[in-house]
Image (tube, rainbow, N blue to C red):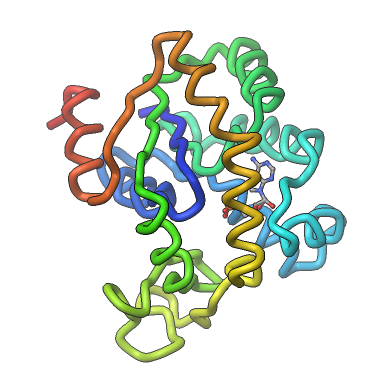
Amino acid sequence: MRLILLGAPGAGKGTVAKMLTDIDGSVQISTGDILRAAVKEGTELGKEAQGYMERGELVPDSLIMGIMEERLQQDDCKQGFLLDGFPRTIPQAEELDKLLDRLGITLDGVVNLNVPREVILDRLTTRRTCEDCGAIYNVKSNPPKVEGVCDKCGGKVVQRADETEEAISKRLDVFNEQTAPLVGYYEKKGMLWDINATSSDEVVKIIKEKLGIA
Ligand code: AMP
């Protein structure tokens, strides 16, 4: 499957993407995960991105397009991919259209995950993430078996630096201003699947039905 997952921070894009990868071997491409790995490794990309990320702002489009151009041409994307956190602005969506045209790739659809703001705020403040493999936990509903240790890889489970109250509020503002217009962009193209995303299991069920793999 080849899908874009749209939605506010905390809407469940990463969780849904991980559930979908188990179905047919499509890969999750999370620009946030790629950037966090670059920051951790201290690469040039990481050094450029870090300040923007910690402030809850978007990293410049040019950096993101460079990452995606390279990533989409890697072999594991042939099986399919789930774009999680990209595109995030209209210019990124326009550049993605051109890139997919050049690569001869067609998307199946664009999933818009709709979640009420109070659910988002609660999820983000209680979310914890594995520093090593990106696995997602929640201190209330899905804690790791051993506190602070990832069930899957043994990595350290932490609260992300951009999940302080201040950065969360900034990220939600940035989402409303810069990313929400993508809903209209893909709706006009007839590609949008608008889904109530309070339950990730339900979202996956609907996506499978739409793709005819229920
Ligand atoms: P995420 O894990 O998707 O919430 O992304 C975390 C942070 O990485 C964002 O707040 C941005 O600073 C940066 N980021 C991730 N994806 C993008 C993107 N497509 N465009 C610009 N910045 C991004």
